[in-house]
Image (cartoon, rainbow, N blue to C red; front, side, top):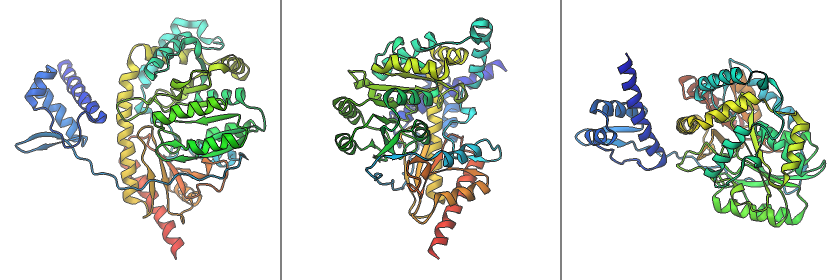
Amino acid sequence: MGARAQSLKLYESVAERLKDAIAAGTLRPGERLPSVRQLSARERVSVSTVLQAYLHLESQGLIETRPQSGHYVRERERLRLAEPPVSRPPASATPVTVSDLVSHLYRSSREPRVVQLGTAWPAPELLPTRRLSRELGLLARERQAEGVMYDVPPGSKLLRQQLAKRSLEWGCALGADDFITTSGASEAVHLCLVAAARKGDTIAIESPTYYGTLLAIESLGLKALEIPCHPRHGMELDALEAALERRRVAAVLVVPSFSNPVGSCMPEDRRRRLVELVTAHDVPLIEDDIYGDLHFGPERPRPCKTFDTRGQVMLCGSFSKTIAPGFRVGYVAPGRFRERVELLKFAHTVASPLLTQEAVARFLENGGYDRHLRALRRGLASQVEHVARAVAEHFPQGTRVALPTGGLLLWVQLPPSVDAHALNARALEAGISIAPGSIFSARPDSYRNFIRLSCGQPWTPRIEAAVATLGKIASGLASASRR
């Protein structure tokens, strides 16, 4: 039994390394894999182990066997889906009123019978739950009284040290004292908004943008200035520059890596230009990097913070999308606003829980995080592709999809005749939750024929059936409007 378990682990390890090479593009579609004997010698494993690894990859649709020829990386049929156009929001700032619309979404997320295609978080089975629970138990015994006391800002030193080490990989070279821990990225962004703006001020944001950002702007009495967004490249910088020259903006808030809901990823040269732009206008840049670790390609996108020389960028992030949403472990490196943000953190929540911070820190310290990320990214990339293919198959003609290169979200543009709110109402009746497009804008009439779909759930017959049902409902609404 022990030998069998060891053998199983070994072939999965070989398969995982090949998966990484395929995901990174080192092994490309149509390329021949090493022969069984070559790989056996290279990996120093038995021929049977290699055969098991190849069978495992073949069962997942990643490779194929060609008679008398060998094993090849499987050619994937290219998705033929048009992408949505660049958004064109009005050029004026406006108060935000999305709270009522958003409340319907998070209420449905608590219904166990509902298939969750509207929530932007990974399924529990994709997360290192058992490992984190073990770390929490050990920490509770070790820390005892210390573990139930306040951990006042700037927060756990162990976590901040681990964040500093990871920042070297991002290209930032930040120190532990540059970070303040927070209750998720949402609190980090909220603190940065309070530090940078006063009631009535204007915040420049991507359009569409995450509804949580809009709720924060609404709760603080700020105005939103929506900037056009390209489905692949993110915020349109020429439009931002024109806005900064035209009016006073208290801060610019962006999600450069795999934005929510669009999934866009700003190229590095544009990130550099963005930092130069806000620095020239002396406007703080609030960078929400919550999805940065969920890249499908071989390299993590470097944050805008990498190009910051004057403390102008306030870098926010968390482990909610990668390790444990419920732990609420986040962080901010607020640059020249550090002292102000630390005081605001104390005023806002006094402290973040110590044990969850340090459980995450130990996970990072022991090397478990990078191994976990490789598997998580592979899983999410596969799930995004499955959902996109199902949308292409089942949704009405004229549907457009923004295909991301990371994250776990799909931004879907339906034909103009399909109202997303009507689709949402009928989907809920069928036990399916989605996120209608209008909650991603300060203006309730925007994106009425758009929806956001979450790809955070493993692809199962239940998820497949839900996407097919959703497409059928959307097609019915499109047909009804033509009658």
